[in-house]
Image (cartoon, rainbow over all chains, first blue to last red; front, side):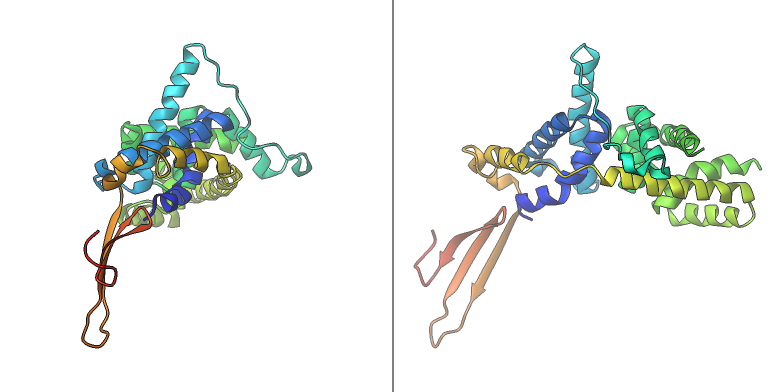
Amino acid sequence: MAFRTLYERYSERTLRYVFTLLRNRHLAEEVVQDTMVAVWKSAAKFAGRSKVSTWIFGIARNKALDLLRKEKRGERIPDTPLVSPDPSAGIQREQRVKAALETLSEDHREVVFLTFYEQLSYAEISGLLGVPEGTVKSRMFHAKRKLAEALG
Amino acid sequence: MSDCRAIQELIPWYVAGSLSSEERQRVAAHLVGCDACREELAIVLGLQLASHAAFEEIERPAPEVWERIREETVGGRSAKLDLGLFLLGFSMGAQLRGRRVPMRADLRVLGRNVSLFNTQRGGWK
């Protein structure tokens, strides 16, 4: 597979994942760039123990968390909405869920993304995040409650 | 029902289709006889559809992102050092033409063909 093909296949998904964590488009694109360069440089280290996507997500996640740690040290990452509100949609169900996604913590939103968008199993998410499977289930349980409340 | 909490914890991955077949069967069997968990299933299906749509709206990276990556990788000065590390392919071909058998060998490096050997052009490169 050509590197460009690899980029085409995974960059959009990686951006969505990183944006879910950072909620900053510019920084998310920087992380995608750094991630793909790291993938290029460390391709020989890919042992095939996980999917290519989860390997790339692991690299992207570490880079995104580094940025979040900088934020906690005082270098503020400005928040931008996960998606732009659509005024014509009013209080439609999906809009309320989108707004509720904004209110979730990064940890909870991440599990929602990996489960519902990437369709990873809880075991795969546990491996990617480096937390026990019970923690993954618990994060989803609470995220689900909060999202369901938004639906009224 | 004491089992409901455990089942409801699994429902998001049931909806996403990422449970093991054993767990999927366990959830399905429970759902048949449990109104509360079927109600939970309906809620989670709605959440899955709405949140998937929200994530789908995040646009792909700008074209400049690839350009910057390309400069640092396949198009960069140091790229040659890494060529051997990425995905390689090797192909050989032969074609009968009269009494001569032209042969060629190509190394595919990151999508580009690098000709190693071609008898029509003469010898290994």
